[in-house]
Length: 300
Image 1: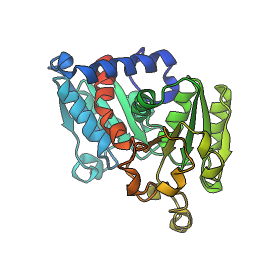
Image 2: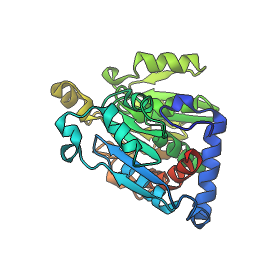
Image 3: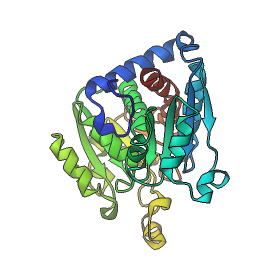
């Protein structure tokens, strides 16, 4: 890694990505080798939105490296509730920690925060913007299960508000990957993301029907329809449940298809898929620990 912060997947080269993934593989094979490498380091966890996997895996990763975490806690129990600005919050936390992990509902919040502090800032999700550490663990899971050579991937669900989708699509332009985007018309990729992908040399293939492309896929990356991002509840209700992966549908898929999901899921993947060889989404979540260990080890 050539950076002392991570705000967007767009800043990552193929070399950056492979360095983190290779290091993560080493750590996964022998986690004890880095058990005391950051004994005196403290990581600040600033989560302005709910989180299970990202927050807990960063906490676990820091502690497995020998360090510890300082958690701001809920917004309701912090000075943010009193009207404190993000700039002031991060400047205070900078004095307590060696790096900051920030999740915030406003797109661009992590970039803004990085301009006010000298410690590394890691974006753990900024509204409908980016989620680059999720992308790193997604790429690790893809590499372990399907590889990057001549990869055909379908990305399905909420492509408009899905920050994991935006980050992953950008990162995949570094590899030999054919990307297919499946969504309702109202949840297509934002124009700005499509433009960036075209600028990076990617062909953006968009579909409204998964059955039109399923047979060709090596990886199917499923996302939930994000109720909390919709400005209009009626719009959400019209779309919710429109795309669902079940055993009957996957009869059309390759036997070695890898089905992924950044989680949490609602009803877009039927529970019957969990026990099949297609399902890798729990493995994907577990990969967050070695990948974030590798990232923290590099940045710190």
